[in-house]
Length: 53
Image (cartoon, rainbow, N blue to C red):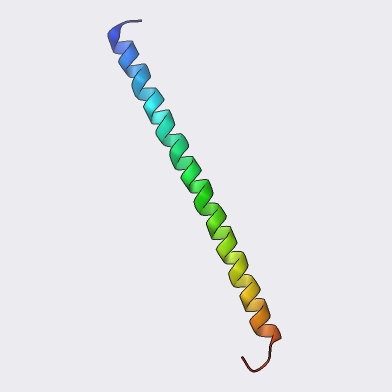
């Protein structure tokens, strides 16, 4: 493998690592969003059940 191909391979590996990191961050953010929306739904439900609130 020549020097150019080796450098290209290195860049691809770095890009792949970046994409994987971003995908992980996205899945974490999705989980947080899901958790927050569930909490809000629960609070809304309990607020409607209790009169005079």
